[in-house]
Length: 255
Ligand SMILES: O=C[C@H](O)COP(=O)(O)O
Image (cartoon, rainbow, N blue to C red):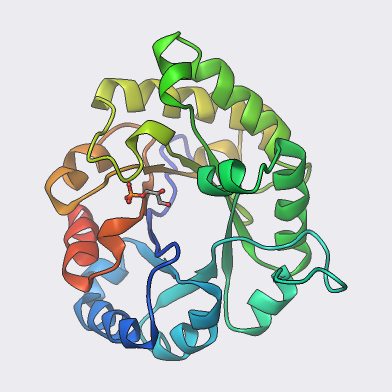
């Protein structure tokens, strides 16, 4: 590996609890805009709600857009009403799964240990785990951002991580859906720390190739600036991933 090795950027959309069958036309529209020049440069991923994973995977055939889940249970199957396993996501056509999103950590009280078990489940099923980390507004204000994110990384990423099975998403909780973003300098500082931690977790050869996404109010208007920050290897996009025009406007930062 050369010193200049860089990850292939990933622009990922998290539809959260949004989207009925009618939203599948957005995937077709994204596919139509994902032209060969852009395909050579980046990967695209859409994570729809569970009921749409299978039809989204069908809609994405031939587009080179990957499909993922937004969460998974740690177990393969069993008496866990309302939960979905990583194997079920894989069977439905997913190749990625988001674990430890701040909305899961808050709404469902998911600890780092739970997120770690879900990442292991993702790997068991052959999925790439997108492990989310990020500080709250209060934690940032008291200067604990780096300590909080470091603790989440150490607790949430299982042994056995590689550049192929792990993506890290840094999402400051206060920036999500708020129309606020950290400064480029603040994003750079956190991503540099994550890269340094990854050297300890996956080793110095593999660490430069792990994709570290930024998430939190990414839009077409700020994507170019955020994607140009050192150690930002793509985006995890919420609201602006629901419409093909917005999502592809963000992907266009890599043209
Ligand atoms: O997973 C996506 C993030 O939570 C960002 O959401 P947002 O782009 O709506 O701020």
